[in-house]
Length: 281
Ligand SMILES: [Zn+2]
Ligand SMILES: [Zn+2]
Image (cartoon, rainbow, N blue to C red; front, top):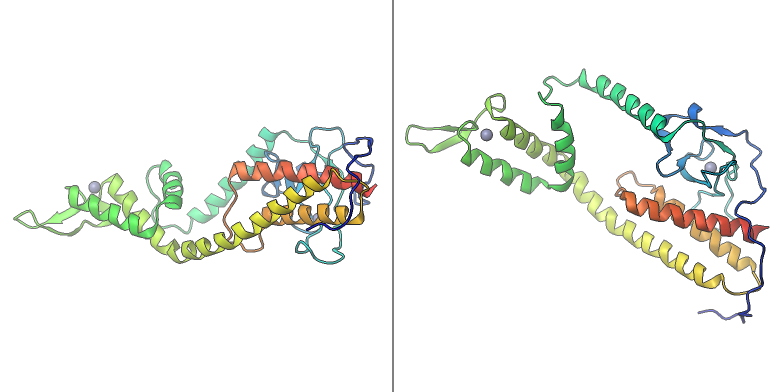
């Protein structure tokens, strides 16, 4: 696998968490950015130059900066680094304030949407439940749940004199659970094609993530060797690019990372960014 000889005695290198490199662009002021383009919970934001999510290095320090990044596919020869790399970030709002802004923005969006909806569900909790269940239940399951409910519910079924079920009651006369299940069935049916496509994309995505993590693993093992060759820097940059790419899948239908997966990737990126800065000195 590796052909070049190594001197396994690592030289002691001075540690510096952040490099002095600074982008020529003016500092990014968080309060001036759109709240949905900032994620203070995970210290990342959409770089205005290249429009991708980029982690903020050392967000708690006195001079946080965007990590160095380029946006070409990992492994691209001579990738062009985004001028937003090392751009100083001014975090002038708290996480709570940011979250509040985000919520205000979402409420406004909901208001715009609701004018187009003819009949709103009565309870405010319904959309949330729908979102949670809707993401975990597929169309077939939802349909079966709905049918089972209709069979067992007096309110939701229309019966003949002998008690045989003729059909489901109209949506407006069904019970609260029945209405939710009917909505869930309709909702998942609409989403079914997208859901199946997302499943295929997920496999593709997992392949890419496995590749990124393998690069990361190789890189971590590689860093014990000296002298530091250009190949090391290239490898770190490729890994960084791969990880950032994983955070910013090109396909909009690619599965979202869980909070834990994101946090994992973020810390890996922050670590690599620090290494990259040390190697590039
Ligand atoms: Zn950028
Ligand atoms: Zn019912």
